[in-house]
Image (cartoon, rainbow, N blue to C red; front, side, top):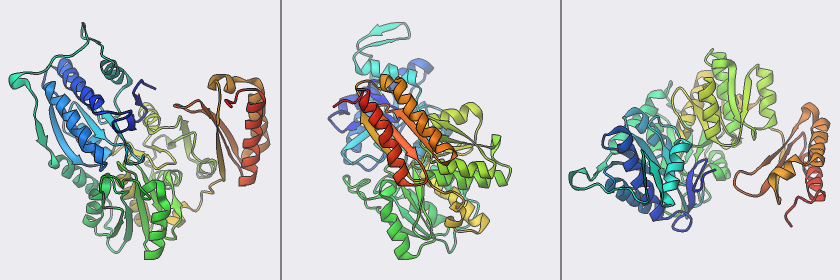
Length: 457
């Protein structure tokens, strides 16, 4: 974890933990840094979600970039994956997305994307953090401030709707079937997808029914989108739709709802498309990448289908790194971040919807039938605040308790004990055949952590 940036950017409450000064400095550094690296004028593309504070951060970033001599290309309200697409296909030095994803409207974030459309590398982020803290030691220079551009070297802004439109065209081009006569529900979370998603589905011929597509700056994710899937479930049932898709604030996640109103989460999406790829000989390495939080039932279903899987730490960043390193084609998280590496370098909610539509139409099967082979196991997760995460994890008595639960579960469930990346918390999770059994085993392990004196009272 960095000083300001986490696994998904610099995130916090607007003008409290993330301020306009922070955004200005991020812009100042990037404009100067890429010019020094390449010798050319820096070109940066910027997108934002629908939060009220996104405009404030956009202007702060633009002020910093242009003051350092960079040109800023504005996509305006758009999705995170669209910024990634434009950066990698149109020769930008980097991209910036202003969003706090699924967080409430009063939070915001700055996500940085490198020239390949991937999340920014840790080394560059550490340089930015050094500059925010008032110190730069780069390119043989040590200074507290970086120089301003002057005269004709000062940067400018460019209205760049065209970039967003090209991304919409790209999504449409990926569809393999007409959606004619398909009744599709979309929950846009009053966020970035509010215009783009409907345009895509309409263009492909669907009868599109849209909810939560009236952003006002303060209603993003509010009882809407992938984190409040019950809203779309009810909407699909009431309107007798064939399928529904819910996005989060910046539309890099997708959770689906089948024709009966049942949730099809990221795990089920990985199974459905992974199996479809295998059937067509397209699943490179016969492997799907998951995180350690994927459900035990997913792994059982993969075993039965003869599909291998890898498990990474929680975070789509780690999923993508594994895919890149090993040449895997599909991976993702239970939360709906799904990465199709042939088509994108980041999770893309609308792309995920298109891929689900492809399987439904190609196999002529409803989503409920496609998800049927996966039995999702009950899961109980509890957090324990501890004095020291490493000490609690390494305690022999705690390890003994965890191993005892694992032995009792055998191949009928699993236990996972891991440290939070941001809090003084140990997370204890059990999946088993009943919720009662899950709770019993979680409490057993927590009792040992407490008895050993690790709990912060």
